[in-house]
Amino acid sequence: TAGEAISAACDAGGSRALEAFLASTAHKPKVKKELIDSMSGDWARLAASPCGSHVLEACYNAAEQRTRENIVEAISRAEKQVAATRHGPYLLKRLGVTQFNQEPEQWRNRAKVA
Image (tube, rainbow, N blue to C red):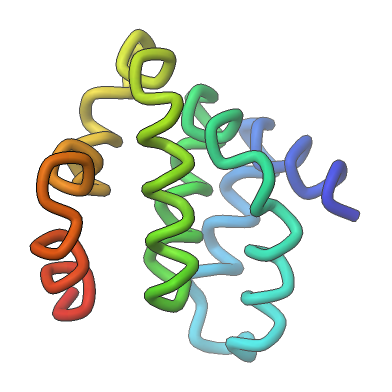
């Protein structure tokens, strides 16, 4: 369930397992998409969590363009909260949240290439 996925993502061991699953080429994209979609309402919570932020990045890397945009949009709404964490500034930079807020079209073009 979505709650279990979020709990696992915010746990040290669970987050590593989810990261490995999302990065693996052995699993079908459809199954990864289902996992990513199940966590879609909690991007800010994941971003604020030291372990969850790693899963968030793995989700971002495994996601389609529209989902990537939804992730960055959700993080941008919680930017101050995320920036206040130890890992937050790094995550915001990796996802291009500031660029998304300032120049969404340029961010979209960069994200399509990545």
